[in-house]
Figure (spheres, rainbow, N blue to C red):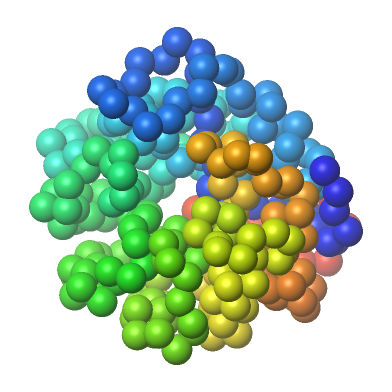
Length: 283
């Protein structure tokens, strides 16, 4: 794992998953590694010079968020947050308990393996907003125009995964990508710069087709961008090098001040981390 990018103190990885050996999975779960991997991620985090992380509930565990909650404890409550999966029957007590445990968002995974249907999302978005949670959306970016009105109806903050997750990469002038820009322009929508390998048709080392979209997003609204590793890269063979994934940020946002904004300042706002002094010594 190599890196030449200077990582500022307080840098955050905004999208990882953790798993536990023997944990119960939902029927027909797409992927659930049979291993305890929190310590493995800690080693990755430290090697990359990161200090903060957001654990996203895997679809394999459905609405049982206990493994993710334990991961928050293991990595440290001060510098770790969680994004839960809940359905529209979730109780206020459960939401309160999850909030106290470090959760601050609800995951809407609308691709294969997702366990929450579209017709529940509006109710969930309103329920979790009462606890100052955001919603995190993953879907095929091609379908954003069809869902634009519904997405805009949700209150509060919205985070969109993986550069919009266009399952067939598009050009920046494509109408669906322009819809993503419109959503960002509301001031309530953030995008994770992550996982180009999942959809790129060009592939390594630069994923130029997806990187063109990442660069356009940074140019359009750097104050709405965040970086993520998507560790441990489930169902991806061979697994991408995490250091190289971080290095891509130098292509997407060449200026060090932009990198600080994307790695530190924006996640600080979305996830409620304590501020880090801008002149802190780099990690």
